[in-house]
Amino acid sequence: MTTAELEIHARSGVPPHSELQKVRLVRRLALLAWLAALVFSTLTWGVPLQSVMVIAWTCAGLACASIGRERSEIVQLVKDWAPLALILLFYDVSRGVADQVGIPVHFTSMIDFDRWVFAGQVPTVWLQERIIDVGNPNWWEAGFTLVYTSHFIVWLAIAGVLWNRNREMFRGFTRRLLSLSFAGLITYIVYPAAPPWMASQEGLIETIHRSTANGWNLIGLRTAKSMERGQAVVNKVAAVPSLHAGFAALIAMYFWPRVRWYWRPLLAAYPLAMGLTLMATGEHYFFDILLGWIYAAAVLVGWNWWDKRTAGRAENEDGADASTATVVPVAP
Image 1 (cartoon, rainbow, N blue to C red):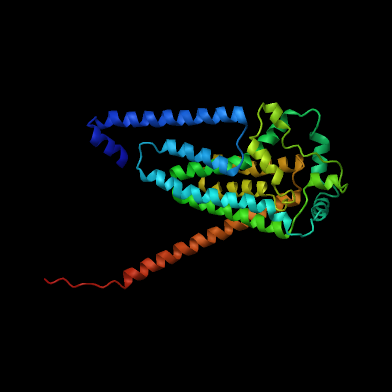
Image 2: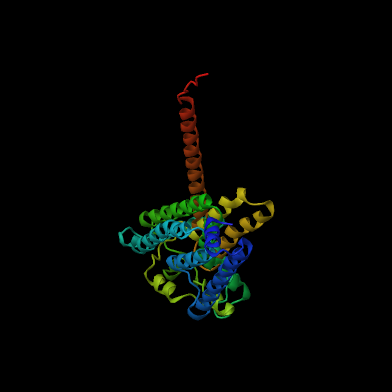
């Protein structure tokens, strides 16, 4: 029983077991109400994909899960998530103006790389010619839509679970993802690059359709209007690296040593499915995806090194404090 639950019991005079059951019941009812509200909102207004909106829903769920626990939990919830929301809001705004600095947009480097790797073929073109039917979407396009959309939801859902279970992992996980985001943002500023669908409009490659939304009609859902307004101001030449690919790879690499072996095939499948989706839907070249994976690995290696370095420094300081401690003789 938590401290808060003990306080409730002390005030009420009700047997601990009975009071604990009541608290748990209230917590579960609150979580069911939160879930019902989320489902209703999704069916009525669309799937929430904007970062701040997803954070708001995540924090509402965590607040429900914190009912009956220490009062400091809610304070800690605000302390941990409010800065994250502000950072992501700043990132979204910065990403929208990153293409305003006047650097020429790169169109051909990614095409040349893909053709070099794939014996003259551009994978995006090859895939669209074979599995995308613009006028008659196939069932697998629903899968592409869901995989693409997962980028906006999965990492925040994972962060919510970690916050509830392991605060240290929550901080390590979010630090790595935010670092990857800003590494991508810097690259977008210094190296604006056109995605395949834009290069197709310029006649540089065969016809490419941006088909990430094709699956919504098959699923029977749509995205929230806030996401549609966000797409209107987003940086359309923020293609290198692919952060969709980078986030998926970082999730897989971060949890690989932390999960049991039977979860690892799923972890490996996620970045591969994301890479296939991004190429098949005309969003990215293989070059963009590969660079996203490399960025993710670099961020992970860098933070792992930093964590080990700071942990070693803390151990050394503790050892030094113990070795220099004054021994006070005790009189017999």
